[in-house]
Image 1 (cartoon, rainbow, N blue to C red):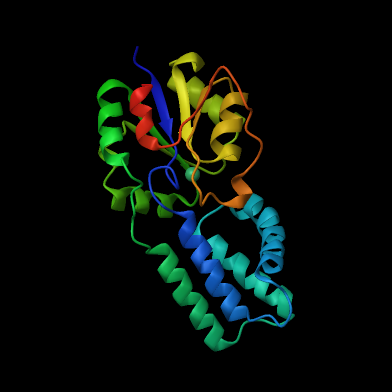
Image 2: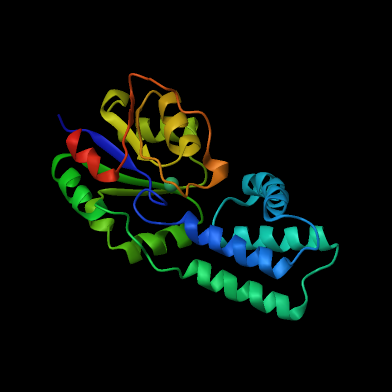
Length: 227
Ligand SMILES: [Mg+2]
């Protein structure tokens, strides 16, 4: 039977968080803190991100703003002119990173689109997310694209009522326990969890061991065995 498949983008269809991790590593070098370890710097950044992501959302520009705030907080002084230049270069590299599709994505989407309705559902800065969708060349497989501010149960409930296909025939597929799996199950949809080793640590949360509407797949291409 024709199903409605909602598919996440970052770290599900293409590499994403690894570029943020590399930017963070460059930031640690730039900061060159006398005694904090990279993990301790990360903890400080996480505190800033927890607060600011609720206000400003996600995306590269917000991440860079958070890095600048982190530098100021840890130094008790703003970045110098030359450091600002380095930060600007880091931002340009992050925004323009090459699109690296995850193995098997192209063929799998082609197969799934021939049998089901595909909707791309991603969160973040609308212009930045749309630019990645365009650069990926994958938009043709999707009949709908949604770029939302936050992927939570309310978001999925309202999208499901708008789509009208019924929760029992609707699935959310993605790499994030916090944004894809947990809220989809909470909204009564099916969820397919495709773990990615570079998933952003703030996207982790508990995934149930067994749930009648949860599938855990090692690879995106394994979707072809189930749909
Ligand atoms: Mg993702």
